[in-house]
Amino acid sequence: MEDRQIVEAVLKGDTRRYADIVERYQQHVANLTYKLCGNRLDVEEVTQQVFVELYMALPRFRFDSKLSSFIYRITVNTVCKMMNKAKRFISADAMENLPEQRSEDLNAQQRIIRDEQLQQLRTAIGHLNDEQRTALVLYTFEDFSYQQIADVMQCSLSKVESLIFRAKKNLAKEVKQ
Amino acid sequence: MTLDEQLEQLAAMEYPHRVDVRDAVMQQVESLPIRHLHTAAPSRPLWQRMSAAVAAVATLLLGVGIAMPYLRSYDDEGIAGTMAQLGDYSSWNTVEDIATDPYDYFYDQDI
Image (tube, rainbow over all chains, first blue to last red; front, side, top):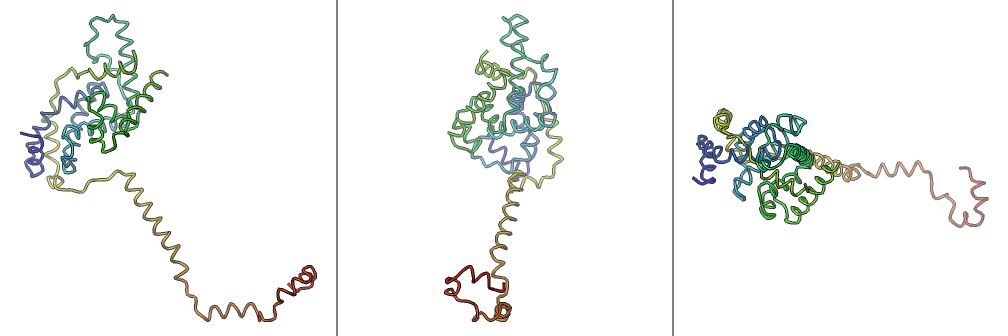
């Protein structure tokens, strides 16, 4: 069943169909959340919260963009809200949970340095303002084109370019400190 | 590692655990009142609502400020009364009187 059909069914009152949307996107939301916050407990809690917020936001969804774009936007906003609430961006658990991919041929010292750099980067991403963070995450982590990002954020192409440029500039400044 | 390389590394990361929040989500959403699904009014961010409220108050105050002079009553009696307090202005010195000797004029006047 297409996303649109499921959403229409849910809005008409068949709330059980919402489980199909959750099943379809939950791993994707978890991956995106993990890239942003890196902590296992937060990932599952945030993923759940994203789908509750999506459910509440469904009446506002007008199908002028893909449902997946709408979900990504809610994910980024929810992560930021929960991070601000917790006043932390990464916890000590994250070091244990970082995946081993790409590190088989690195020695332990290099891996620690790499992990630290990535932690710093995650923290720096959390310090960006909402617009810059959304644009950067969609561009870098979800491989969205500038046009797709402009559609999701309902702004111009030039604004998207400017947001990504400034986000990277701010990140570079913060990780160098 | 450059910033772009770091971003690429982060982008390549996948959450290493299988997630299944379906039951937990459905338990939460099914307890929500169904009527909210038919609410079409989008909620605006707080800053937008506050800006709208401030703009409304400012417009009201501006409108009252502009309208105030027109709301005061300027009846003839009021104007006449004011002129009476000023005295009989026909006896006021003319410009020529002041011009001949300004110093004497102002020095001699009972002001």
